[in-house]
Image (cartoon, rainbow, N blue to C red):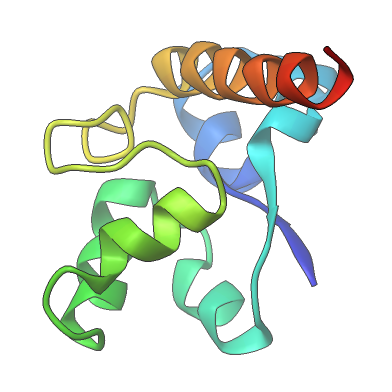
Length: 102
């Protein structure tokens, strides 16, 4: 299942972004149904706390990194900073494409 990492309902309520920006590939990742239910309409700072409580110590960052998502408590995810998230994720995915095609 693919989801929007910063939920559309959250971004609609807190920003004036258009659907194209929200639905961008940069804001998508693959997760299971249960995690998707946990996310709901919550910002990352809220749902990451819920997910972290159910994981072994240190596993959240490992999981986030496996999806090429920012890690660490100081990251843009914990600050609910979509613009910084989108820029960081674009750089990360761009670098992966360059590595694969160089």
